[in-house]
Image (cartoon, rainbow, N blue to C red; front, top):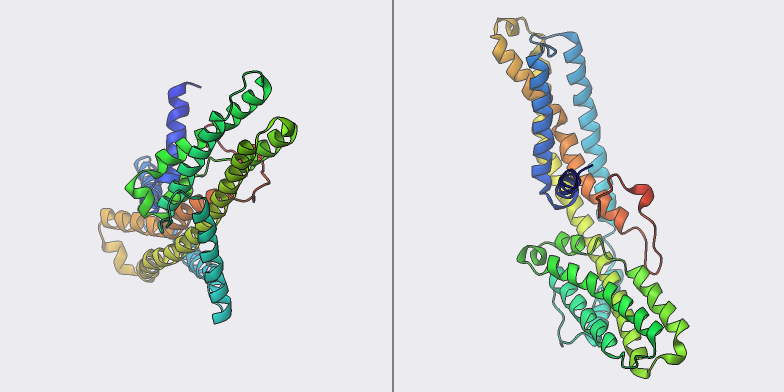
Length: 332
């Protein structure tokens, strides 16, 4: 397979699953369905007059979509119920969040940490990059070839992640949208970096200076804070995304259901046979697109929600291989 094909497939996957606006992705899916129906119409495989098979198909979609909308909204209500609580529980959650911010500010190079998710993670990664560079500069003894090589490799991995995340976060869009902060850190591997830190510390304990040990501890704290922030922002994002999905599903699904019900109500009327064929075909095409509208909305949101959940399923210091869950070799 050529590099151009692989790059195009990777870009299409990135846009469909991660980067694309969910409503535009859903519209693209519906456009593809409409295009397929038009192809079937062109080759005379699409009905041009009312019939029992099409009537049964629309009836099945009407009942199925009603169940789909009801179930999705019910599941969302269960998710939202986790945000409810007594004053004591809500106060404890708030105090825990404030305590976490205070812990982060202790390792930051500024007195007040940002409140926006993108800026918060950006500052954490910038500080992590500075600590990693400071660790590299502590290598002054050329005789410690093995230790120098290990630290250089570790610092290279840390600064590589910092560079990628910083590039993704250093935009207004990433700072304004909470998903921008999550998407920027989907490819980072804090668990592996934490393991490498512990391994180097253990293997070269006798050769490490006090300054190096302090930097190791500081880098470990930064990795922990980054992982906690990413997990928390993921929770907030999923809650917001599900609430938005519920609203969109109702806004799109209810008119679609109303149109399908009206279509079934007039489908068997004798007067419909007097209508021009083009009118009947056009109305049938619109009805078929309306059948798939709730499914397209749900699919566009679930694609990204499930991808975020898959890439954030494990909790540091543990890591899981993604090989068994990779659809395309170009995924990241």
